[in-house]
Length: 153
Image 1: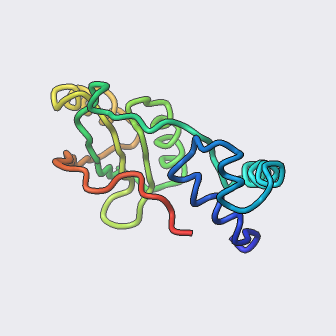
Image 2: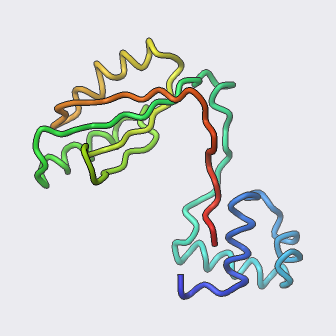
């Protein structure tokens, strides 16, 4: 983050909440010309500060009303088992996020599905068949209190 100046941080802050902002409006808000703002934006993308742009969809409207987190405990914690698990989970489109964590289990998975019946099928046919899975614990979300908060820059 040491390479970012105050203007870069302002650009990133604005883009986190207004990803579709027009370049001219962005330039006005940060006090630069459209050309200078565009060049900074290109540099921030090239340097890897911005992964991409996309729409935030409303899962419930699209039939994905059930949000579930799953703790996964592996049978062994060896590099080979970690690699096989990671490769397999990347191929599972139902898995929105998967994080290796420190603590009482090895991975935390986030998934969205239509309902608990669909989750049960996913658990039995996908999750439990991933390489090295010994045990899982499921947490169905009752209410999303905060989602997609911007990074504090």
